[in-house]
Length: 97
Image 1 (cartoon, one colour):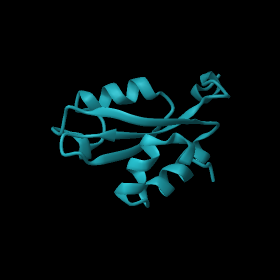
Image 2 (cartoon, one colour; image 1 turned 135 degrees about the vertical axis):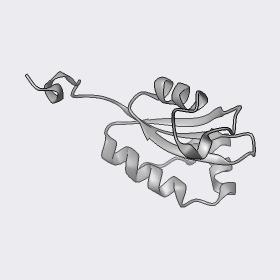
Image 3 (tube, helix red, strand yellow; image 1 turned 45 degrees about the horizontal axis):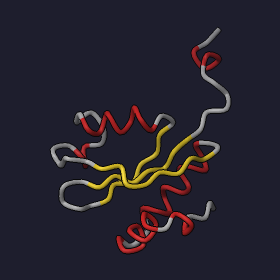
């Protein structure tokens, strides 16, 4: 049995926004939100967040698969900061695809 066969088939994926100490928002994707946020907090995640703590997980959205999560991440990264802030305040603004 290969490693691929050991992975669960219905893994949820997450898109998230993290705020750093400069008030900047970082958008990312993961299949384990808690683990990934801890990695960011300990400096083992994205280089863009290293040394910029404290970090705050401001927003997250669970999705059905990696492709959908990456598509949403791409769209969020293209938003203006004001639109990202609006998404955090009112999650109803989130519309998949």
